[in-house]
Image (cartoon, rainbow, N blue to C red; front, side, top):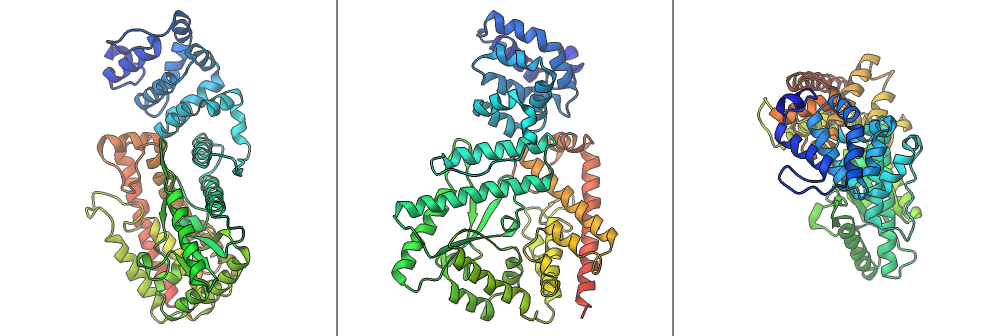
Length: 471
């Protein structure tokens, strides 16, 4: 059996045998067959082409395991096998199963999406409708929309930047619907409340399982009304954090409000503007380069955004601010869960994604007053806009390519390994990951990542020093 399976690059003979037995008979090696004769014959007809295609995937073992799980969820297996006889449908299914246990399980749970895509795989090339009707199930909408967005991306219908915008749009629709739901429960029609996104959510750059950084603002002077709005904000966060069979909707972080987690969730606008001018730290000012209004009172949002832009871009920067920011970045490195040079934290580690993000935010603080196109933009858009002038064409290219590569690694760790960690995996997981990422070896990917991060750290230091010497 091992010799036969090895022809198809299947390494785990015991597991592969169980999967094949289940696909052929509906049973494990020791169980009782459940599939009828028609289903067994349908499987035998497509087996040769199917396993030849599985052998061509980055990890045939993972592909087969994901496919077996998807087939087990089918109510009419013979029809599914017949569809696998169609080359285009087979490429679609194996494209998903070869890259993501997460999306394979998602299709198994969502027969409606599987049916709609099986009839027209090319529909993935169409734009996504991420509007959410008032009668829709919010959790189901989020799960189904993210599944579709993820499949579109791993099959090559969208770029990484398009994926993050799709995921951000889904989160916006969910947040808007949740706010409306909580206001409706309290019979509030026009609340003096505005919700803003910060971090990657603020710049349309979230990926799977990203936190939503939020801040809630009001302009009411009434303590009674503020108490009501505090209840609304609390309920919004609780609803966004709902746990279902598909997992948690979102992890919400509201700690970027003044005084942090010890203060009320809802912040009064005038008091917030005063806080920014009198007591806010350089870190808070930097974080506000990525703020964006999402839901609630638009007039209030415009007033707050005027306050914030005046504070972030018009106020003089303190002396030594570049050096202070670099020191703050180095301090963030110590928060990584790894201290060993043998492990690479692609987010927090030296030369990780945060280096590029800090450069972009420092550039917004430095040049945003005279260059409005830098305001509220994504990290890559800011880096690109700095040439010509501050960055050379080569520096823009290196930073952009490195950042995209590190973010692709982060995304694939979440959809292939189903891990939220930003530390590059080791041993068997690294080998699997490398094959799925670029069909390389684990050692090759590790060396490439190390080189990328070293180059980013060198540029971060050089460009920080260049910025500090500019008038």
